[in-house]
Amino acid sequence: MKIFIDSANLEDIEEGVSYGVVDGVTTNPSLIAKEGADIHSRIRQICEIVDGPISAEVVATEWEEMVEEGRDLSQIHENVVVKVPVGPEGLRAAKKLREENIDTNVTLIFSPSQALLAAKAGASYVSPFVGRLDDITQPGMEMVRDIVQIFQNYDFATQVLVASVRNPLHFLEAAKMGADVATLPVAVVRQLLKHPLTDIGLEKFLADWHKASELR
Ligand code: E4P
Image 1: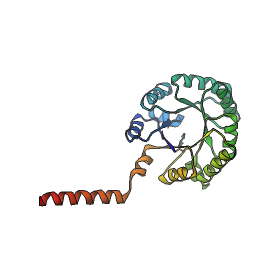
Image 2: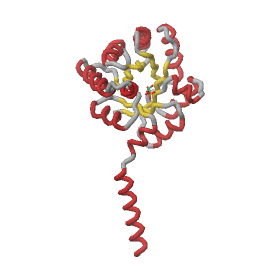
Image 3: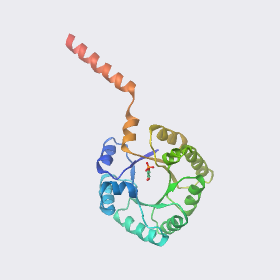
């Protein structure tokens, strides 16, 4: 499973890259706004750090404008993937961008049916938001299981990019289900690396080493 960093913060992205586990990056308008950055320059900076798919989202609401914005974003770097929201306008934009060979990530997916339609429209990725479904007491990972199954049934090339990941269990379940990508806040990457038995084991190895060194 590929791992993307879900952030527009350069330090977060660099931290993930330093662990050697990062295949790409996802951003959204909220993440860019949080950084107070201009979208074009921030996406360009991210493309310099990570050599992989970098999702940049449109903010237009009509499909023709989404396409224009998408074309502009795709000019920043060959690795840019244009993120469009699912819905009638988003699907029209995804179809048009596919015809122009521009990769898209259809986002804000909350049902397997939305994902299926986005795949048919030619999306390169679909982004099911698991954490936000959990927030309203609907199991987000069940949606992912259904999407993976449907895409396998029909041999869709569209990749399942698990988004709105909030904890290590989301990540583990996504890997067990065979999702193509999980996009993670760097804090979740840190949580994944942590295990109390690793800490206890390391502490004991070092204590034994120092004890033995004193005897020498
Ligand atoms: C990524 O593509 C999404 O925009 C992001 O994962 C949303 O996460 P959130 O629900 O934690 O805001």
